[in-house]
Each structure stands twice: as structure tokens, then as C-alpha cells.
Length: 192
Image 1 (cartoon, helix red, strand yellow):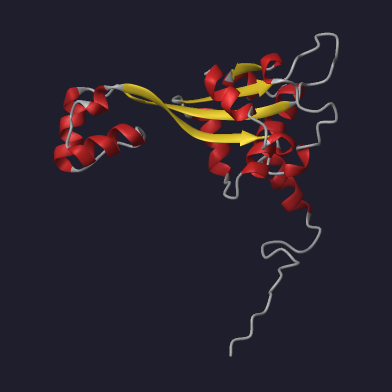
Image 2 (image 1 turned 90 degrees about the vertical axis):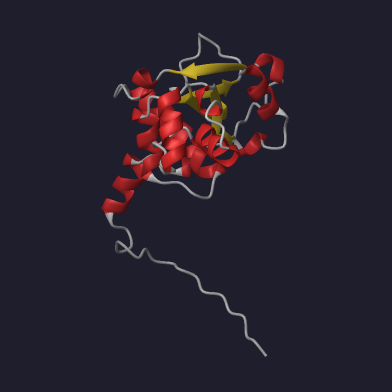
């Protein structure tokens, strides 16, 4: 007979309870999911929503509104996905092939508040490799970092032409918890 028990971790392993370093790191790395607040106005109809491309330079410009918007984006990531790391933030800030899009409800230009983020889409542009790179990578079984889909399909089918094609891979989709059952994600993908 097996006895099932439950073990709960109530105290941080790395820091003593209430240590300000943990709070500072959580804020620095935008890992606080409490930034995801309920949307009191409800979900707008999809036809009233717009998909926006997020300019990386503006997002990481050290402007107070940009930092708050970044906190909201990453908080949606944290609330929507079980596995997050500081590398996610680094990729958003410096990986040139990665791009962010946000689905926002109607924006009132007279209102001085940031719009509510309904959906965040992270894309990675891949492919467009030279024939020489594709042939060398596939023959040596060594692929350069990035271009996950072109390398994988090229390797599986031994097709040196596939990595030459260009495309976009959806890396992550994060949806506001209040609207996960609505077809808002489908609308976001169609807007791409």
C-alpha cells in the first residue's frame, strides 16, 4: 500500500522570506504576473480590435509608459505559460529575427491610460538561407542557431532547397486570462 502525501514549499529556497532582492529581481525581469489585471469593460468585439506591431526600440526606451507596457506584456507571458525565463526578455530585446505583435481593443486618444493588451504574439522570421549554408549544414549535420523549422524539415527530408525558403514561426501566443475562451486568438492570427 502506497501513501500519497503532499509537500508544499512555503519559503523561498534562494532568499529568506521577505528579502528585497527577490522583489527587485522579479520586477527587473518583469516576472510579476499581478500586472495582469481583470478587464472591467469586458472583451471588445473582434472587429473593434486592432493588431499592432511593437517597435522594439520604443519598448526598451526606458520611458515610463514603455516600461509599464513591457511589464504588461511579460506578465501576460507569465500568466499564460508555465515555463518562463530571463532569456525570454533578452530575446525580446535583442534577437533581430523575433518580432512582437499585440491585439488591443479600441483606443481612446483622449484617455491617458495605456490600452489593455488582449493577446501578445511573438514571431520569429526564419529561412532564407544560402544554398551553400544549407548544403554544408545538412551534409555535416551541423546547423547554425536559429531557423528551427527550415533546418528540421531540411534535415528530415534531406532537402537542401527547403532552408532557402523564408517564413515565420509563431514562438508564443499569450492571451489575457479573461479572454482565453473567446475567439480573439483566431482573430489575431488572421490579422497577421
